[in-house]
Length: 121
Image (tube, rainbow, N blue to C red; front, side, top):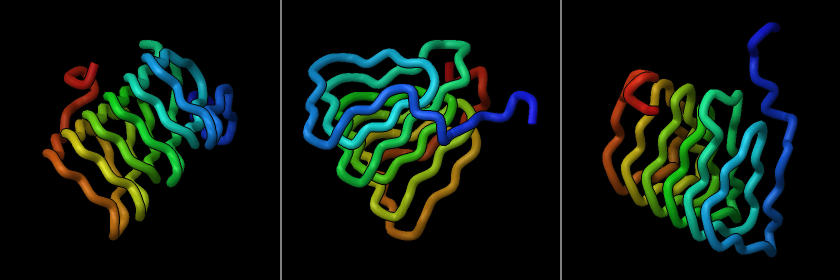
């Protein structure tokens, strides 16, 4: 399908034993299994997504069109297109989303704020 995102194509991987100190700016697919002490920011205008595995931790904000969380975020999350909070997802911050899917067991210690695409930029 034209314009449809391929969320199986990972361009960057942060491994389970990796700790990143500082912000990450990315395009395409980002898969985080380790820890990021900084913000995770997709390049504006890009068809990007981030997947945070159950072992993954981000201490900072996450901004991407598509966000899939299985792990922990200690900061605000901004998903301009879609957000998925899986069973073990934990967010300690506000969540700004356009479309959201949340599993039983996911936790948000903050506000869920439905915002249109323009507001999320």
